[in-house]
Image: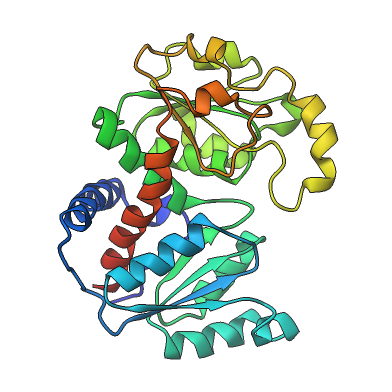
Length: 300
């Protein structure tokens, strides 16, 4: 049987993704009951980090420990990847020693190339193009609070970045409508949008995009590696902050999500992210449970 990788949400079909979300809810309940469940005993996950992380590292490492396995943290400073070893050779070697490999890096091409030469599952922990693990947690969070997201409307406000691209793929796979509100110069990749067809609509006015939405989400205006653009982006994104006034245009029961870290007063007001419609802390916790479901799926 060929090795399954998880580089984007398109690597699994709709039935598999919905099963992952349902299983994540079950695994969360198992942990909360204090039950010991160790399906990955003696399994080892290698975690390659070229970008810094809080939630990705802690969730994957905790997941492996709770499942009875282990996780090894690998940074460019500590490996030959940082001294010029080609990706193909690193993939060949690491995949002979590890049971799965999670990579968090800049260029999406790196995880694609790594997966081509890996004998074991490769998981995209974030690239500049996609962040699929976050979307598993987001879908789990919506299901827990509102049930199936199929047929609903999600509004993404902000930069057409890796989170936006992953929401586009999620709209295709989980069968919801996605409204994207972004300044003209910050729209998502046109090919990714086109592939989603009528599932996605682009707006330049957040008020139009958020109308009647069942979920509103955003991300920082300047992602890692874009810090030098902070001042320009703050000016360009004027009017794209998620405020209580904007949330009132959404459905009365709309949820607010954010992948974190958040900059209160920039992309979102404090009284939204800390308010009653916000489920960001459940969303953050669910990174652990959704990724446990993913690891179980790929390794058992």
